[in-house]
Each structure stands twice: as C-alpha cells, then as structure tokens.
Length: 139
Image (cartoon, rainbow, N blue to C red; front, side, top):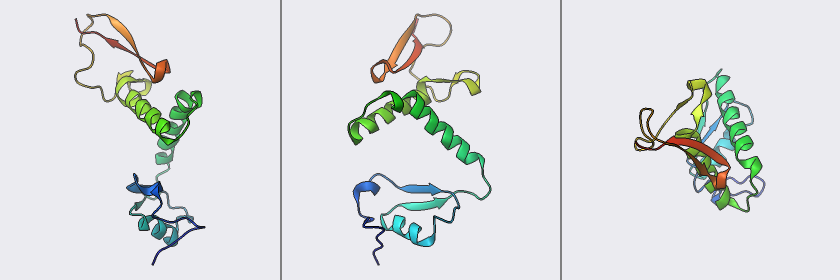
C-alpha cells in the first residue's frame, strides 16, 4: 500500500539523503505519519520519553548556525546552502573554541597547528571571511 499525504509522494527526492527521522513523542507523529516516512526508506526513531534537555541542544545548534552563518548570507538554491552548512559544521567542530569547555577545540584535526607556544599565530577564514579562527604555525 502506498501512502500519500496531501499530494506528497514518499518517493520524492526529499528523502534521497535522509536515513533517519528523530522525533519526540508528540501525538502528531501517529502511526500513519510514521508509515508515510518509512515508505520513503527513512527509519523513524522516537526520542526517549521524558528527555527535555535533548530539545535544548538542538535549539542551541539551530540558533548558532542561524546567527553566525545563515542570517548573513543570501543563498540561491540548495547547493550553496549545503556548502555553507558543511563549511560551518567544519568550523564549529574543528576550529571554533568552545567557551563551555574551557575554550578548547572539541575535535581538532591532528595535523593542524603546532603544540606549545612557539610559532606565529595566523588568522584563517571560511566562507569568504564570515567565519574566522586563529591557528599557530609550526615552529
């Protein structure tokens, strides 16, 4: 049985790059909705019950990406949006120091920068200077 929702077909290319749909336990995610999503080869995964902090992490990420990146760009199409988000994610995880973690990089690349206090500090950029970070050159 093929399920359609207001003329939307689950075989539409919207699901091409999606493997999982994380959702809370709201009643709007009923069985027929989950069947529609799973018809497009996307696995639905309800979040644990009584886990209010999960939403806070997602909202913080959305706020960061909107405030630091997307609100300062004019994007024409999906490809530039995907490129901007990929660049921002690399910056967020590998180059941006996190104040809540004693200003440390969460996932630094092993070959990036030098250890110690020797070497010149250089300003590096992503997205045409929108995102900036500093890196120490090898001594």
